[in-house]
Length: 430
Image 1: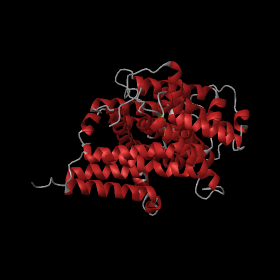
Image 2: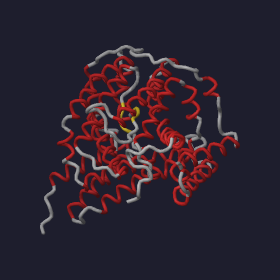
Image 3: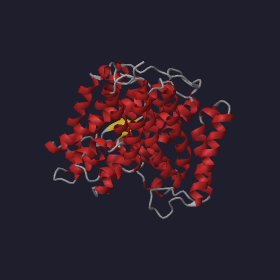
Image 4: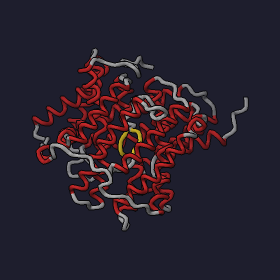
C-alpha cells in the first residue's frame, strides 16, 4: 500500500491546495454538468432553462461536497468525497419529463424520493456488516471497470459514432497526456507528483490550444454572474414518478456505499457504519436540496477516488476547497465554461490511468481474501455479470423498465450479486 502524500486531515500549503483542488475539479466537472445537459437537450428545454439546471448543479455540488467533507453533526462522511449529479436518475427523470408534469414533476418526485436515502441512512451500520473484504473488493473493482468505457470515449475524442472518434490525432494527444501523468507520478518530486494529473492536463491543454483545437465561444457567451433560482420550475408530485425515483434512490444507496468503501481504501480509512450513515444521509439531504434549487439528484463521484489513488493526496481540506471552486463555477458560469473547453482526449489521457488505479485497488483488496472455491465463485460471477451489463447494456432492452432501472448499472449488478452470493453460499468445508 502506498504511503499517502497528504493524509485525510492534513492541510497542504494554500497555493498547493488550490492546485490540488483544481485537479479534482477537472476530473469531476464534466460529469457534474453532463446530466443537466442531457436532460435539457432530450426534453428540448429552452436554453435559459437548461442553464438554470447546469448552474444549480454546480452550485449545489459545491455546497454538498463541502458538507460531505467537513460534516455537520451527523451529516457527512468527513472524507474527501466529491458529490455531483448522477446518471442513475436520468431514465426516471426523462420518463417523468415527457409526461404532462415536465421538469416540475422530476424535481417533485426527486424531493419525495430523497426520503428513501434519508431513512435508509439510519440502517447503514447494519448494511456495513454485509460488506466483508470479498464483497468490498468486488465492488471497488466494478467501480473502476464501469468507468473505463467513459475514459475510453474521452481518449478517443467523443462518443462512438462521432466523425472524429478514435482519430489518430486524438489518440496521440491522449497518449501524450497519459505518458506525462505516469512520468510525473513515478519520477516527479513534491508538487510535480502530487499534482501530476492537473499538470499533465494543463500541458495537454496548451498543446491542444497551439493546434487550434480549443474554442472560447462558450466562454464569451457565458453570463458573468448567475443568481441561483430556487423552485424555478416549481414542483409537482406524480405518483408513478415518485415510485421511479425511489427505485433509483435505492440503486444509489448501493452505488454510494461502494464508492465510500472504495474511498476508505484509497484514503487508508476504515469505513464504519457511522461513516456510511453520515455519507448516505448527506447524499439524501443534498438531493432534496438540489430539487429545491432546481436541479437533478446527487451521488458521490467515483472518478475522484482515482485521483486520490494515483496521487496519494487524501486531504479532505483539498476537496473542501474544490467544493468552494464549484460554488464559484455555479455563480460565475464563464469559469465553468472555461473548464469545459478542455478537449476530451486531454481528459481521456488522465482519466484512463485514474480509473485503472481504482481497478488496481480492487485487485489488491481481493488479493488479501482467502483463496477458496466459494470466494472464487463470488468474485467470478459478480464481476462477470457486472461486466456483461457494462459492456452490453442492450442485454436489458427487452426486459420490463423496472429491471432496466435497477440493473442498468454494472456496479449495482456486481455489488448485489456479491452481497447475495456471500449470504447464500455455504462456507467451504475444511
